[in-house]
Amino acid sequence: LTLLNSGVSVQFSYLSRDFWSALNAKDPEKFQQVLIKFAGALAAGVPVVVLNSNQRERLALRWREWMTERMLTLYIGGGMGAAIDSDTRDSAAAAAAAAA
Image 1 (cartoon, rainbow, N blue to C red):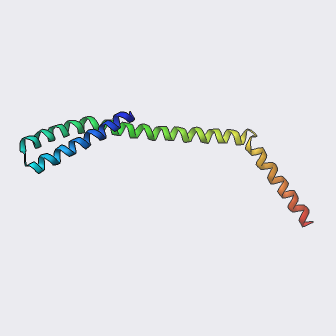
Image 2: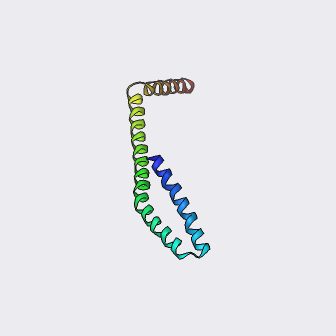
Image 3: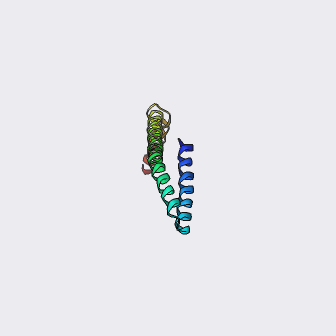
């Protein structure tokens, strides 16, 4: 999908070049041909770009959900949570001893 997206970008780059060349040369026939090609590229290219963008966003969201679930599982399952809780208790006990 990313390769198709890159191909669409390259195609629009060439069409843009041809468009400005035809406009600069004041060639109405070439200009008309480029406009027809541009319309076809637009019809084919826009869905590719939108689909690529949508898939990237969905993948990023799934990754964030997975990472959040993993971190919570580690925290709640005793991995990180137990270490944080014991550090907190040790600090509280040290503070209470120092205050007494």
